[in-house]
Length: 148
Image (cartoon, rainbow, N blue to C red; front, side):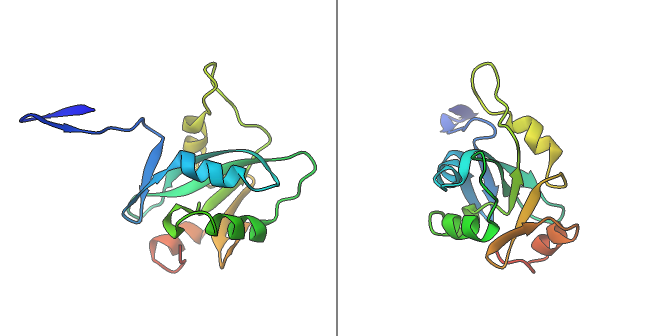
């Protein structure tokens, strides 16, 4: 909690545990739980990334697949849309080889967030499936041409 003056207080969440998208608060732990329920996913880390011209931060999930699993963008999108409200489904999925953790076993979201969505292994949500990232995607989302 944080004092706001005049005997008012505000509830404060830990930085990085929530982000705001489409006027809604998104809890990263809820999204991570939904991603981790997918049978091909070993572990995930969810965080918000800024898009030029868009209000708030879009969801991005860094995903480590089980050994031998193949990424199926349509299956993952269907899985997530059945478990999360539309605003909470990540727009970006980045395939990673390992989820790095701190000495206290917290995921290194800050490093992933800094790398953003223009990185190797990134897929974007389009027409009900995750497809490989393309440069015009962030502008299309900001302009409302991509339904989320």
